[in-house]
Structure formats: C-alpha cells, structure tokens
Length: 284
Image (cartoon, rainbow, N blue to C red; front, side, top):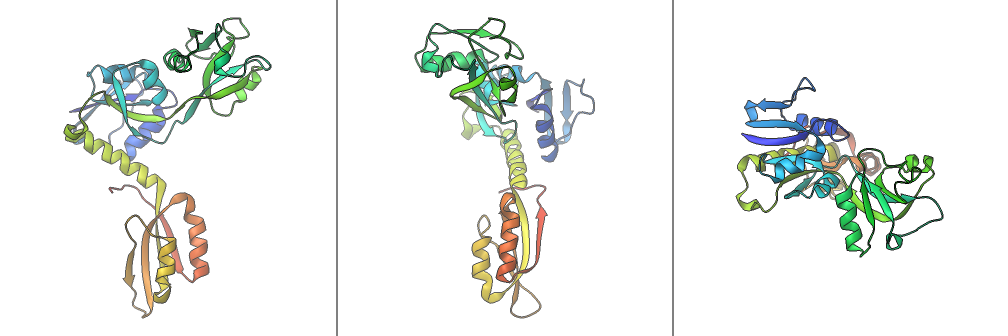
C-alpha cells in the first residue's frame, strides 16, 4: 500500500481532509484514529503532527506526505516538495517595536525569537547576518515585551495580532508558504511508484475542479468565432449543431473567477441558455 502522512490537527488538517475526500479517498470518522487503511484505493493514511511529517517522509518510513512548505524547510529533513496544493497560504515575516531596526541587515548581535528556527537561521545566513535565534513553541508575540528577544519572526496573515502587541512588520517576507505534497529527497521522478503518480493525478484533478466551471450556451453559428474567443477552453471548446438551423451549442471550461464576467459578455454577444456548472472531478 501507498503510505501517506497527513496532518492530524491545525490549519492544515481540515483542508487536507476535504481535498482527500474530493479525490475519492476514505476519511477517518474519529479524530483519535491515528492510522486509516483505505483498501479500495490501496492507501494507508498516518495522521501525524504537521511538524513531524517531513521527518517521517524524509527518513523513508512513509512514501509521501502533506504538510506546509514552512514546516518542510524548517525541519531540515531529507524531503522535497513535489506539488503545491493551494491552501493554508501564509507568510513568515520579521516584526519588532516601531522605531528600532528596519531591515534584516541591521540584525547583527540581536536576538530573534521564532517557532521556525531552521528557516530563520538559513535566512540570516543568506544575508550574512550574525544574530542569535531563540526557538519558541507557539505564540512569540510577547517575546520582545518579556525581554527574550529584540525581534520576532512569525507567520503573518493580516498583521492584526502583531499590531495589537505593539509591533510592526519590517523587511521583506522571509518565506511564502502553503500546503504541499512532499516525498523523500533524491527519488527519481521518472521511476516514481505508479500509486504515487495516481495520487498526484487525483489531487491535480481536485485543483482543476476547484479552479474551473463548465459553461454551456447556445449561439448563432455566425457568432461562434467571437463567442469561442471568450471561452477558448483548455484545448478547444465543443461545438455541436442544434435542431434549429443556424444555432449551435458550445461547451467549454472557464476559470471560476471569470465565469460571471464571461456570462455577461456572452449574453451581450447574443448567446442564450448560458449555464455554469461545477466540476466535481477532472483528469487533464
């Protein structure tokens, strides 16, 4: 069986479970369940702490895993990213009290508190900065107030938490992260396990289904070229003659974020019976 590590809790857990469900895999019914066998799909899921997943995959104990890019890089494990999953986006940023340092190049001799010591240490080394990194588990916003560090490096979404703590974001982002699929580093992709390829195809199908809708509409035959320029599809749209002469039916995939605008433009062009339907699964 294909052995897959998945997050057992945190911001990665529920989106990962939803994606796996959409990909046709069995889901656990009890959060206390640590191992789940999906015999129909020849997969064994292991529910682990997100921070530990890269370690298990990098050691070769498990075949692949779902975790965050930040956690992968911070772990130092012999594992590598093979697919972006489009959820759990976050940014790792530096923050400090207003009016102090403004840039990473000014951090020399300072202490930086973070939950991502590996990533921050590497980032400082890239900039040739000699600073002390203090590893803390969990929230680090109070580290400056309590005198543990002069600067913190933390995951930022809106920045509200940092501002409420009297801090301001400084410098460029350290890392842009999201959920990713990982495997052991150095494995030959050309000789990858067929079950891994199938798993990745399924997840890719979910990503496509989420990003596109299927659009159907009727249009006068002489307007097809103009209509198709609005809905080119992935290769090309399907065009079929209707019973009423001079009319054709068109079917095409369009990006979900553009669907309403495209429907408006098609209607203005003369298209009618314009329908947009969700895609539940896809293979490209």
